Length: 414
Ligand code: FAD
Image (cartoon, rainbow, N blue to C red; front, side, top):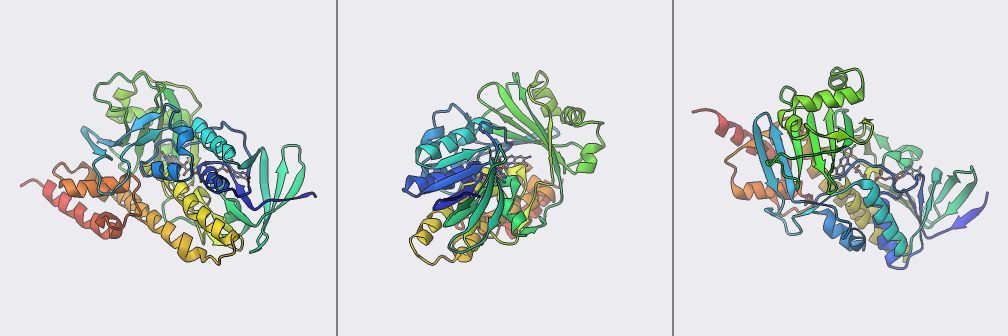
């Protein structure tokens, strides 16, 4: 088998791989990315958070997506039966941008990886990573192309950005079950034909099923008249609705009054797709000669659109450490990478848990919220989950619980 050499080998060309590749290549490092697919390729995960913007800028990729004409996004709207409320990300506690985009990932991911190539990364598409040799100084990858030709890549450091491929979690036996209950998502793209004047295209719309609050919907409009629509819930409950996924999605959308009304003229432009069991955790995010980024490590839940934010954040934490390690520094990956990364992920997890136990829904739909508190929560939903000066980051679980109790009491008649 031929052996090739590179300083940094990255598995996967999604947002986390592209961001790490761009940062490192932009600083003159030798970077190779191995991507099993061919871009553009469909990916779910289309609603970004404002925290993505400084991250894209920091890795040098913002300029490659800034003029793509993506749908502007300034917040999240929520509906439950006849209730409707919106959180505006521009009114938030933390510093940083308050707006971002809703993107078709086929286009977005392609622009990001082409940006990384412009900055000097070499990307091989149609090449799958099949094996890994852990070694602190000289980690190695086995790769195979579409002609079945195998080769060995000898690197000085490996970053696993393989998303749902979870290459190193599998090969290094690091998989660990998620604390979140298994859920399934059904989704498609539609020509949305939305004419409803009370629909705000600048926000993701999250709907809650009128009878089953654990089932929720998303509507993510794009700038080209299309939108991403989907539903998430326990697989048994979703399966009970109809005989096949397409009929299930249609029936469930029809059961939520606002979604049914807003999407009454929409036409699907893709087959309905199903993803299940996507929540995943991992023993550790680093090992001899490697670190794990984005979804290849831990993935929570789509409800707050935190996936790409965490993917970019992990890449931007890892890339400077890779540089320092290659320069001979001794890096403690636990304290400098994994622990701080996981702090923000834990904040998001508290919000996801609070969503599914109903307390966050109580808070979000509470009408008489103190402005400052709403800004603190808006900050986390905008992706600023690492800002520990925000009390709703620093003690998220406890504060969400007591705020939900106060909101519930306040809502009781009399
Ligand atoms: P990916 O984008 O998955 O990229 C990984 C790449 O690695 C892929 O291109 C793959 O082909 C490649 N690869 C895999 N295995 C191999 C291999 N063996 N060799 C070579 N290449 C390989 N996030 C948001 O931010 N906003 C949302 O609105 C949102 N909605 C979501 C809805 C649902 C239902 C789900 C399940 C997730 C959602 N997410 C959302 C999460 C989002 O999809 C991911 O967090 C994000 O794509 C992670 O990026 P990544 O770079 O880590 O991995």
